[in-house]
Length: 70
Image (cartoon, rainbow, N blue to C red; front, side):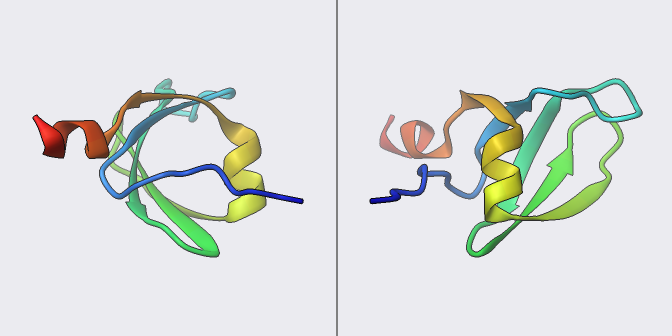
């Protein structure tokens, strides 16, 4: 059975490939069947389907969930 990875609004993720501006860090600004992410280098906003987003993420740098509990 397929279990989707958990991502929250405000998470900062690192992608496998870098954006043309040179940054690999993105902030998650929409979660659902599609993901909307904002490049932290140039503020460009990109919308991706969930499977493509999950494949492109290397790791979660900063989790918004952990910041709320502190």
